Length: 254
Image (cartoon, rainbow, N blue to C red; front, side, top):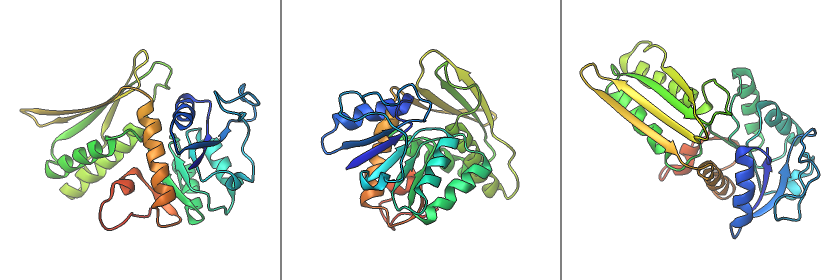
């Protein structure tokens, strides 16, 4: 499978490059960076490729592109692709509501698998939290996130996604607005990513934690999603990691 990477010089993009080059059966087809990147024109690790800007002929040499860039770069990339059917895995976060709506419109032309967290096991963790919230909607959740010191001091895409889905699950179960889910943000050293959710039961507390040890967890999960998107996705549409785990009934389109 020939993989292009958008945001190839970033924290996750760099790990993706390393993992693709080290995995039999995968080929690094392109390493895309912005026009003002200091990596532009340089050799990519041990490959014969150079970091370069995206071009209109991407589909000719990529089976799929994995995007860990920025909202602006991600949308510009989609515009460049136009009506191309090139599958895309998008791990970029930070989209505004309007930007996400604009991004989703491109799913009419190609498969887009968009999610906030690709770490192996995280989807099961999320579903367990949502199941608990539906069964015990009166238990008020709070989210505590810890990431490395260089990450912006604002809630991550993972925390915002969890807060939104927990709110929806509790509100549906109770039949009225459950109120917002509070997110607490911490930044410590080189912490890759820890998500802790605490449910207040009054006389007790349920604490659930998902801790990512290395960035390879995100990279490996994105590659697994790319394999699914290329070989099993039923066609154009918007998908999530949950779709890749579906064992019956096929994948769901967003």
